Length: 354
Ligand SMILES: *Cc1c(COP(=O)(O)O)cnc(C)c1O
Image 1 (tube, rainbow, N blue to C red):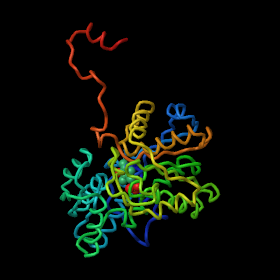
Image 2: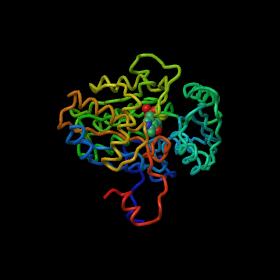
Image 3: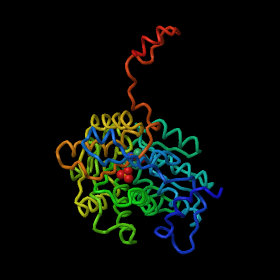
C-alpha cells in the first residue's frame, strides 16, 4: 500500500480544500496519461501534439474529476440524495460516486440518443433513471428547481464544486509538460470543461506553479448542429452524433466566452464527418480510443493546422474527454470483416492478404 498514488483531491489539496476538509470518497480518479501523438502530429503538421486521455478515469470520462469533489461535499453537507440531468457521462459518474457514498442518485435524461455504455453504467450502479420527453436543457431546468427545493444536491456543472474539481485536468497537463501548452483544445457542450481548464491554468499561475506570462490559448469546438456559442444564440433542437455535446444552451456560456477572449483563443464548429474522421485517425494512428465528442478538439486542431493557423512547433494539448467503449455503436465495422470463412489455414492466409 505504501506505493499507492495519493488520491487526486489530496494531491492538489492546497489548491482545492477548505480548512480541515477531508475527502473519504475516491475511486482513483485523475492522473490520466498525456500521450505524445507523433504519428497523428505528423499527419496534422504538428511536432508537439499531445493527447490528454480522460478515458482512463474510473467511469471513463473527465466528469469524475469534478464529481469526486461534488459528492464528497454533498456527503459532508448531509445530503440525502444527488440529482443530475445528463447526456450520459455525468450520470455514469454521479451514479458511481453516489454508490460509493451510499446515496441515492436520480438522473433526468432527455429523450433520444444516450450512448449505450453510459446508460449501462448508470443502471448498473443503481441510479434511478427518469426519461423526459424533452431536450437536455429542459432536463437541466427541472434539476435546478429540484435543487432549489432542497430535495437533492445537484451535481451538474452548475454545482461550483464540479468546475473546481475539473481544474485538476489543467494542473496535470502543466505537471506533465513542465509548463503550460501554447494551446489547449477540447470539445464544448455545456461549456463547463473549457471554463474549468481556464480557471485551472489561472489558479496554477496564481499559485506560482507556472508562468503567468505563458497562459495557453483555449480552443473550443462545438458540433455544427449544436453550436450555440458559435452562432450567438441558443439552439432549440441540437443534433449531432457526438451525443456528449448535444447541448443547445450551455450553462457555462459566459465563462466559456471569457476563457476564449482572455486567452486569445477561439470557439468554432466542426461537422459530424470531421468529428468521426478525427475519432478514427486518433485510434488508428495512436491506439487511443475515444468517444465521438472527444474527437471534436482534434478535428478542430486539424482544421486550424491545415489553414496555417497553428505553427508546426506549437505545443498543443487536445483533451480526449471520454472513452470510446462508451459508444460502440458510433464505430462502423469494416465491410465483410465479420463474415465467417472456412476454419482452414489456407483460407485464413488468403483472408489476411499477407
Ligand atoms: C461532458 C462531456 C463533454 C462536454 O463537456 P462540457 O463541460 O459540457 O462542455 C465532452 N465530451 C465528453 C465525453 C463529455 O462527457
